[in-house]
Length: 157
Image 1 (cartoon, helix red, strand yellow):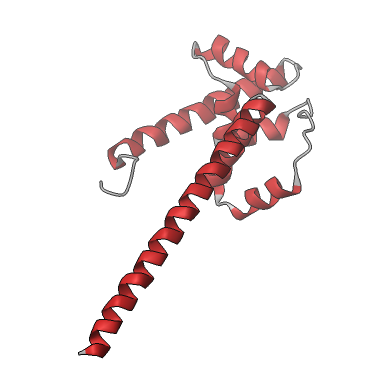
Image 2 (spheres, helix red, strand yellow; image 1 turned 30 degrees about the vertical axis):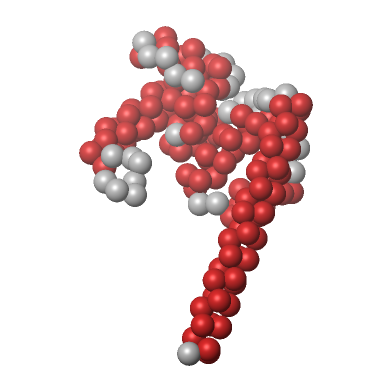
């Protein structure tokens, strides 16, 4: 299992749970449509709870491809419009499927943080990058010094 943080033996369980979630959401969407109610993430959550006795979060629906497809197909409420910066759009397009989902979740998590805490983190990262750059410069200088001293010894012999 070296190199992988996800145990392979759990994959069948995860796939089964994803499939069950998608089926529950599809059932909830059908129920909402049959009753003529609006299909929203909140409505899906409440209907899944009523039909199946299981709690489900809106984020679970978003992260489950099958569940999200069922929601997208029948949703009656437009999602809130968020201005997606061009930089984020480029990053998200460059990511493979699961990576894009994780990146979008991280972006949303960072959007909920206060601007001052983000500024503080950015400044800390810049300071750490500068310290790392200085360490690398020192190591390069040491390598050149050692290389020069061995080269001079080799020529002198």
